[in-house]
Image (cartoon, rainbow, N blue to C red):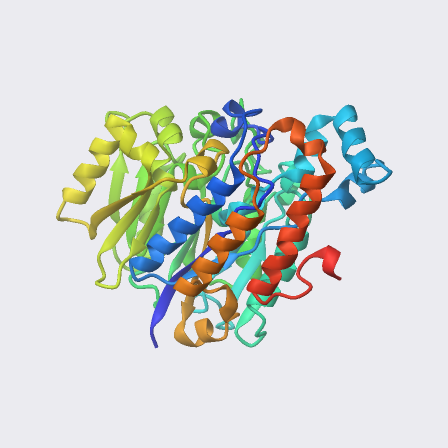
Length: 444
């Protein structure tokens, strides 16, 4: 039975705005307060999905969450009609207002951690939505992610959608952005790498300037819940210097696909022993594409988002790098990519540069926008088909965006009840396109 890595991309919401809510995310902080372009952002994201589909890959769509979330503002003590509610929140604390408008669920790499059926003891695909407790504006996303995943992957005989880990800092979990699966081929049992920033038993090991978002305790709980073979699980700690340089998730400094590992030499606290730990259960050495400080700096890695590219297997078994234009525009990073693609000792032989500027300005590149799910043909057939991208669905979604999305959002517009109502009405229409009735709280 054929097995596919399916990319489920987060559809960028009409509330996409620049509020700088994420400490440690350099791009998010540096662009705070700028005017965003939600329509352009969503169209860029859709074109990225269509490009991967055009390369012969399976592509799905994850719907955005209900934002602005006025119920959250009411839970925080604000009251009145929508206009008064929005104005009161703005007057009290604009960051609370911005949090309730955040379109951050677009970064589907943080939606969940996924283990394919080839790796799990019960031979089901296991998914655990991330609790995202490190940032307020994302900390309640799992309340919507969980039912959405259970609607898309509804067959309990094939899929196990767990509840998020306890919403407590000891179990801080940021999802697949800190998880890489290695294997010879997607259909074969793999070795799952869980990357954490801080260990409760060794608190001094964390970063000094920016928060370490993923904990080892969360990684260990995920591996247990997913019924993984302990001999085929590896835990590794992020290098604290990388976190302090703006590597808030591991997917900003490393990525992998099948038996290829692309990473910066400062990604992990113990890189050399990590390679041995991964190779032993895999039964073979990984193909390493390592960037050194002499190639480019941590700062270059963070600003170019090279490692937040998607490394994907094409139908002919070669690999392609799906990179942001920012990587091409950095001379040192671009030279490194050109050398990597030219090498004959790895299957990477193609690079596609994409314009995802709106996402990049808010702190997420191509890989942030997608959740990787390895599915057999049978599992794919039993996935909700209306979210699987086709030319027809792409055209419908483009038309929906063109009709419903604002061209721009400035910070002051977050007080506008008409804009708020329009964003929610757009989601109502989307559920009919994706055939996901009663997905959102306002529809129940």
